[in-house]
Length: 84
Image (cartoon, rainbow, N blue to C red; front, side, top):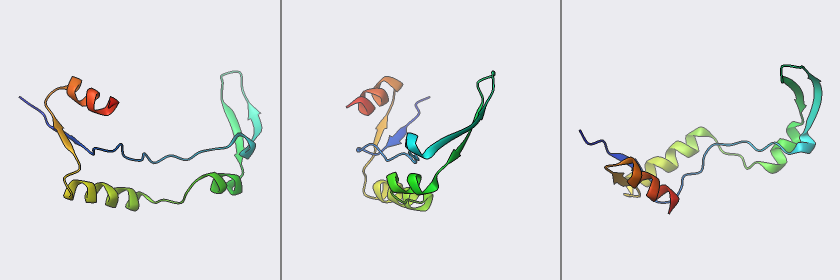
């Protein structure tokens, strides 16, 4: 059985939020490694461009409709394409 995986030629932008260290204020920590922090939303908004999940999905749909994807028969082929 051959599985096809379709990806865009250009690496898609993953949904991420960047937290500058200056935006984090330690409130408490435990010996188990749990940390509770307060996050300054003003600093988070300053370093992150606004983007919604709907915009990301619409971009992926446009790439698919335009044929900006590839099919791979093996995992090695997929990995090679991602590394390129």
